[in-house]
Structure formats: structure tokens, C-alpha cells
Image 1 (cartoon, rainbow, N blue to C red):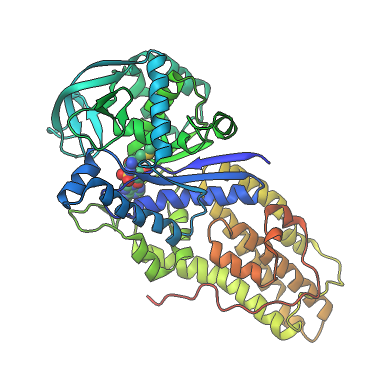
Image 2: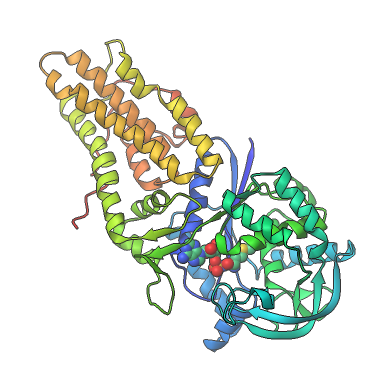
Length: 503
Ligand code: MSP
């Protein structure tokens, strides 16, 4: 079995989860589930980023000690993985012992390889971004993200990032898809070409973090600590064999705001520690809410749990993945959500399933009918198209064109709806039962294939669809697309899969 390893960023535990967290996790879940059905052994990592000044400040403001604070807030993110029905294979917390070991091991490697030196940092720091900024980067005295910055002067260890400029450029040139989308790649490339400064990788003015080995006056910079989570899961510093088997990751999915950390700092750390590099970093865009930037001060933060309570999990999963070309910014609009639920889910998909199955329950004794007739061209277009569809979907998923992959599945759904209208099996009830049965057979077979294709995006609804045919778990993978439905099996009645929502 081939391995596939995908990661979300690990989320800061200074606050409650919001739509941005849910979005990254869902995109990864979609890819992870797809790959699993396609025969890969998938490792899908998510978790929480629990150290640093931002989290320490949040704990102080709540008058709770940091450890109890992060234990509490991290639970909300763990809970979110259940609410979103994620298929993650681990949930990492940076306060775990295994992670501490991994960070210490990486630090020592970097140190022993001669890439860390002790110095003094003086410059601007944004706690909200947990990032250093140069004077020239500030806009009206703030970080480019709009966050406040403070002047920091403290002893600090540095990583010799400046030495890695050429190697990084070579990496981006040789691996044209290392950073996607292309526009983001160009941004990173010009940033690196502009020259890199050595990076401060330890702090002394607070203590909520992992101690630097052999000098407990310093804690590690939270981004060095956080990025290491991706190798902690692979057993780095604990089990060499496991690590070799499991690393590198195939895909890091991140938001556009944290691309620099993943596409510049992270590969530089890994190169300096003589470790293999991840294969790809994909940066997605940001959501706005009804055209407005999402922010706590505007009070328009979208709570994914409430959203799911109101509209249903599979509906939200579908909407978030379908609405925006993956990589672009997107706008969350309630009317657009309702529109997609009613037209694409209730009308297009829900009705197809409903009308075919109801018709069979009345007219084929609730069974998959026999197809005595030979299949004609139109039938074969419906039941034999899966091979091309799977090839197309694979390609789209491998290029992270998630929204387009859904469009492709919906084309199949529309094709089946068109087929039922054109073939009008209801007109054949009295005149040509054999042809009617053949048409129904083809429609049921198409619904089975659609059910299989839909599993990554809507695990619950596709489960209901596949339960109509009482398929075993083992018969739901892509391998089974080519095995046809057996005539004579009983169809199980299902309630409407996607009821319309009245607007
Ligand atoms: N802890 C760091 C990541 C460390 S990874 C080694 C972090 N955490 S975060 O909680 O602030 O952000 C996590 C993700 O949420 C980021 O990928 C960010 O882009 C994403 N989003 C935050 N707000 C968002 C939107 N409004 N829309 C889409 N995604 C957004 O950064």
C-alpha cells in the first residue's frame, strides 16, 4: 500500500475555533478520504499549537495558569474534529511529551550542524502573528497583517536562515509545484530573492514554551516549536525506523497568512538538519462574512458548530468546499449557502435518488431490476463513465482543485437526471417492462457510483445512499466502481437525503 501523509496547521488555543479552522481541516479531510478510498494508507494530522506569548497572554487575561488554560481550550478543537466528522489519524498537542522530545532533538541537530548561534535580538515583534518584522515591513506602525507590534530587545539564539537563500531558490525552481497556487509561489520566491535575515529562534522575556536544550533561560520560538509537530507524528527523535517510514509529508495545507513559515522557514530548518522535505505546501485563501473581513471586533466571527447545527454537517462540508476555487479568497453568504443546498443538494442530488428509488419501490418490487435488454449507447454513457471520471477526479485532487472535483461529480448527477427525463421510464410501465427495467438498472448503478464518489465530501449522506444497496464497507472503495449492482437485491428505503430549506 502506498502512503499518503497530509497535515493541517495546528491551531492556536488562544480562542474558540472559527470557520477558518474548520475550512482548512475540511479541505484536508476531503483529500484524506479520497486518497483512502483510492487505496492509499493515509496519515492525516491535525492538532493544537499551545505555546508562545499569545497563548500565555490569553491565559493571563483569564487568570488561569497556562497549562490548565490550554488543556481546556484544546478540548474545543478536539471536539471540532468530531463535529466536522474528520478522519484525522492523530491529534497532536505541542504540550505533549513526545513533541517536546522531537523539538529538542531537532534543536540539537541544528546546533550540532553549526546552524544556531547565540546573539541579541532587537526589533519589532507582533504577538498576534507570533512573528518578527523589520522596520521596513511596518505599515503605519503596525504589522502588515494590521496587528500591533512591540519593540523587543533580548538575548536570543539565531538560526542562520540567510545562508539558505540559494538552496531555497533552487528548491522552488526544481520543484515547480512545491508551493501552490502559482501566484503564492511567486510571492514567496520574490521574498526569498529579496534576501533573508537570520531568524531569532528563542525568547527570554516569558517562559511558556519548550526550553532550549542546555540553556533553560531560553524557550524556543513558537514557530520552530509548532512546525516541528509535523515530524513529531512521524516519530522524529523517538523512533528512527518509524520516522524513515513515515516522513516526508506529501502535503501541508495552510492559510495564505502562514505560507512564509511553511515555505521558507520550515524547509530551511529541514535542509539544515539534513532531513527530507515535504513534497508540497498549498496555501488556501481567506473567508469573509457577507463581504466583510471576519474579526472579533466586528462581532462577525462564524462559529462552525452553530453553522452545522443550523444547516447540517454535510451541507456545510459541501458548501465550503464547492463555493470557492481552492486557493482563492471566498465570501460566506447565507443566501448562497441556501441556494446551493436547495438547488445542488435537494433538487439535483436528493431528487435523483428519491425519484429513482421510490419508482423502484413501487414498480420493481423494491428490488434492483433485471436488465434483459442489451444496454444501448445512452445506458453505457451512464454506467461506464466512471473510469474516465475517476481518472479526472484523481488528477483534480492531486492538483488540489477541490471545487472542480465537486463540479465533476455534479456533472454526473446532472447527466443521470437528464437521462431519466429523456428515457422517461414511467411511460414504459405498460408498454415495455424490459426496457423500463434496464433504464432503472442503469440509474441505480449510476446512483451507486455517485454514492461512492461522494464519500469524501459528505460521509453521512453518501452512507445513506450506499445503504440503499446494503453495500458492505469493503465494497465502497474506488476499486469497486467497476463491479456492477446485482439484480434482485432488495433496495432499502431512505428518508429524503437533503430536505429543502425554506428561505
Ligand atoms: N498556530 C499557527 C499555525 C502553526 S502550523 C505549524 C496558526 N494558527 S491559527 O489558529 O491562527 O490559524 C490556523 C489557520 O486558520 C491558518 O491556516 C489560517 O490561515 C486559517 N484562518 C484563520 N482565519 C481564516 C479565515 N477567515 N478564512 C480562512 N482561513 C483562515 O496560524
